[in-house]
Image (tube, rainbow, N blue to C red; front, top):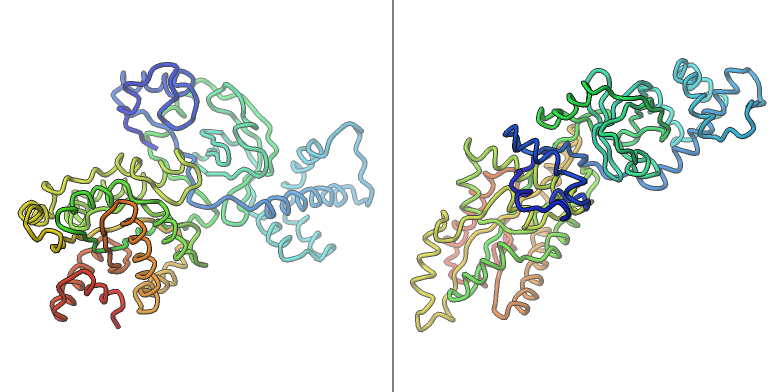
Length: 463
């Protein structure tokens, strides 16, 4: 992850490091920050973020239990004996596995076939056996680690994000060395890469240390699973939101900076389905017209990429496994313009003109807002997901969403002390949907001679 070095500028040696590690600055990023200032580079860390959820405890335990059984079978197969003799009575099972797997992976295909023939394995066991057919037993280099995730590199300079099997990586690799050489196995199990939790180590040369120091700046492609086919699809949710004209600026501040994460989490529940590994939404609303103009262009492509790609990564590293990206993290990638400097300047002018009018309490001002998010999905399920998303624009689903939105904003109105009303417009998979949703809404309002926000709520229940 490339990080703007300005976040370190005012940090004192004994302060908590701004990178989110919870370590003291002097024991974390201070050295890299000084080097970055000298070299003119951005301070960089290779992110351990993965879009794929951690394996369940049940899957981990099933794998470990079966793996031990398979190594015992391998020893029996190799010795052609039903009795296993271990020379050293004090040798633990981990030491036995470390020794046996060197033999197993030399003839794994043959042993796996024999195990299937002799043991009649279950479906879960067959899945593990098939994973072990594609295992890579070799030397690797540990580049970066967090508690449950780490990045390793093989000798062909391919990078892999591995998931912790049992013990946290921060405990297993609790060494002062920057990088480590590892003798281990890389196993594509379920939807991620794991190892068998057993590591032999070797020293890394100073030349290699220098090479690894530069790795984050090269923006390497990191593989998360065997198929390497997880696609990040942006998701756009569009709304129109309004209030009394004299409260509009207070309403906008609430919407853009203080919106509750409760709203986002309730939306995420609607998207839980069989097609997606993980969903993430930005908890703050963004002004739709600005997004459509500023980001839906060649110039905005980089900012949009950072917003939907960088924000989830930062959210993971700062807040852990959280699907809701908060406003403070959003601001690192996209700074919302003030209303008077925005594409919605006409809204600002109308508010200024009317907020002191005698009938201001009867006057309503509304504007368009969007939420951005990402869905992580296998390539071969993209078409299925798009069909699934269409259900969010059918009448029954819109009614469900509209009622939930209405309830939330009534609660929010009670909290802030004035009425805020919202209408769900629709969902889409790119920024063009913002423009189309706004145009469809305006056309509906015009055709039906609707003037107030309460009348306009009929739009969410349209046929």
